[in-house]
Length: 386
Image 1 (cartoon, helix red, strand yellow):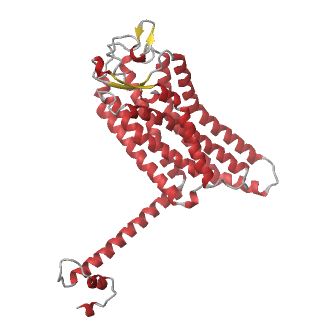
Image 2 (tube, helix red, strand yellow):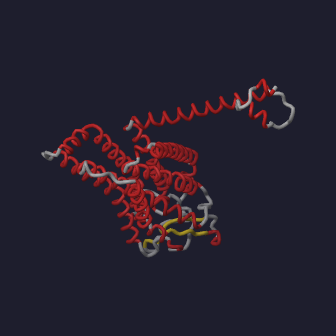
Image 3 (cartoon, helix red, strand yellow):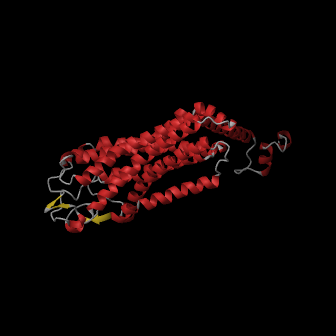
């Protein structure tokens, strides 16, 4: 799989050329027995805590982001629906992709999660990238529609749900090549103590290079182009010398609130693109440089895992970007937690009052009687009960 090819376990041990779809350059296998993992394994206790920190920050931040948007009905618009979808994408990466790929990279036994999880994780990781790209592109288009058609009625929740579902369906469709070429191979029968989960394009190397270029183009240039075109179109609309009072009010609003929202989009796209660019470039280099001339065999695993970790860190940024550009996000979050704290204290106070009252009552039985319950709830005066 493109994003988790950091493991070359089968590489240094296969003796048969072209075995199991292994890439071959002439009569020389791409991997030979000199490939070592000692350097990668020596950094295991550096990378695994970093993966854990990334997953923890991303899960916490995106769950809080989803919580705030879901609880605040005033924020149920197209832009926030798409931002919620970005948070969902990041959660998918944290739950399914980060643990499995990190474990696979540093486990000497290889892939231990089974055949179905092998394909599932590969597809979900690929689909998450496409879903994030499509969501960012849709946000850019939505920003243009808001400014270009200010008096137009905003889309409802049904449209937003349909758009999110369509984004995921299209993302899964784009991940079809990954699903078709991801292979789970148990090499223990061949005397090798490892199981691999990799993409193999046996005899279709040109197709793989084309697909790698497509991923690089789609995940990097498409969102940047969408934001650039949207910004230019919005600027053009706002500079029009129209007599429409609604558009003049939009122009005034753009200098304040809308510009901040567009800044959020721009920063999100840049963080996403810069985070994923190293991994996409490394994957493309590995597809083209089958002799490991550009990236040597000794360091290719370190480079691969490092770039993969940087790509996974993209799941951490959106909650901080959203919070820093929207002060109401922090105030709303604090308000919710304060209300929950007050509610908890109130419930604890009521519980302690009930407990105190029950201790003052004569305990004639081991279980609470109906009369005791009535006294506790002030239905019967205490002196009458005594």
